[in-house]
Length: 456
Image (cartoon, rainbow, N blue to C red; front, top):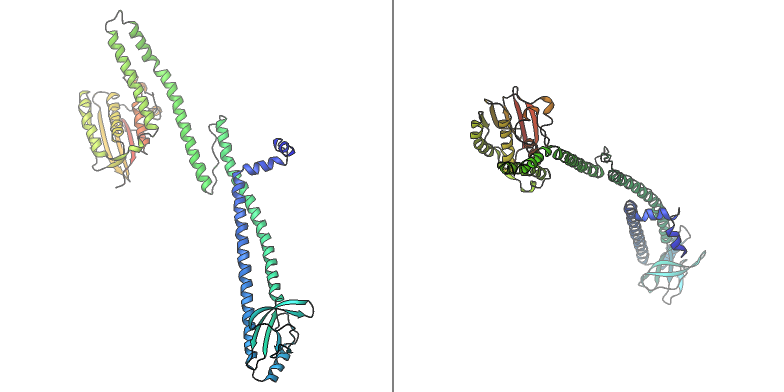
C-alpha cells in the first residue's frame, strides 16, 4: 500500500523515474550503454583467459626444456653439482629442483615434495615462507633409475593474473564512466531533437499553423526528417489556404448564378422559356462544380500513379488541329510550331485538357483578328509548351492572380466562364512536376508550361 501511494503521488523521486521509463531516448541510450558494458566485459574475459593460457603454456614449455636438458647429464656428480648451483634461492620465477633415487628418497635439490609421476603435473611443495604451496612440475626418469623433478612456483602466474584483473577492472570502470556520460549526452541530444518535433506538433495543434521544425546545418537524419515534415506542413498549409479560398470564392461567385436560377424557376408559370433557361443555369452550375472537383483531384495527386510516357509533340498537334476550326470560326488565326519527338511522363488526358484550356482561353479573351500561336520546344531536358497571342495582353497586376481559382481580369468580366480554366492548367503543370509562367509577349500575352521530359 505504501508503494502504491508513492507511485500515485508524483513526488520528486518518482517523477524522474517515470520520465526515464517512458523516454525512448533514454531507453536507446542506456541500451547502447549496456551493449558497450557487455562487449567490454566479454573482451576483458577473453583477453584474461587467453593471456593466462599463454603464460601457463610458456611456463610449461620452459620447465620441460629445463628438465629435459638436465636429464641428459650422464654423470651423477655433475648432475648433483648442477642442481645445487641452479637451485639457490633467487627470483620468484626461478626453477626448483629435486632428485630422487630408485626408492623415492630425495637425494639432491631444494624442492621439498613427494616424488610425482613422470610428466607435467601440479604438485604441492613446502615453501619456507608460505608453507604448503602449489607448483607446476615436470618429472623425468633417468636411465639409471633416478627421478629428476623441475618445478616453478604457481605464485608467478597468480601474480600476473591478479595484475591483469586489476588493470582490466580499472579500465572497465573508466570505460563504464565514459560510456555512461556518452549515453546521457546521447539521451539528452535525442530528447532535444525529438522534443523540437513534438513542440512544433503541439504548437500546430494549438493553432500556430506557421510553426516549423528548426533545421540545423549538419544535414543529418533529424534535419532531413525535419525538412520533410516542414515540407509536408507547407503542403498542408497551402491546401488549407486553397480550401479557404475556394470556400470564399464559391460563396461569392455562385451567388449570382444561383439567384438567376431562382428567378428562372419563379418565372416558370408566366414565362414558357424559363424552364430551358433554368436548365441552362443548372448545367452551368454542374460544369462549375465539375471543374472545381477536377482541380481538387489533380492537386490531390490522385492521378499521379497512372502517369505513362506521353508523346507531347503529337498530343499538342492533335489538340491544335481539333481547336483550329473553332479558332478560325471566331475570327482569329492559329499558328503551330511544335518540335518533334518531345516526350514527358504524365497523364495524356490532363495534358490535352490543359492545352485545350490555354487555346480556348486565348480564343475567348482576345479580339477578332488576333493571331494565336501554339509552340513546343525542348530546352535543357525541359519541355516548354507555350500559348501566346498578339492581343491587348494582361495587366501586370493581374498576371500573378489569374492562375488562382475564380480570378478573372477586368477585360473578361463580360465573357462567359468562371475563372477556373487557368487554375486547372496550373494544377496540371504542378502535378507533372512542372511550373506555369505568365508573361508579356510584347505585344500580347503568353503562358508557358515547363515540364520535365521523360528519361529515354
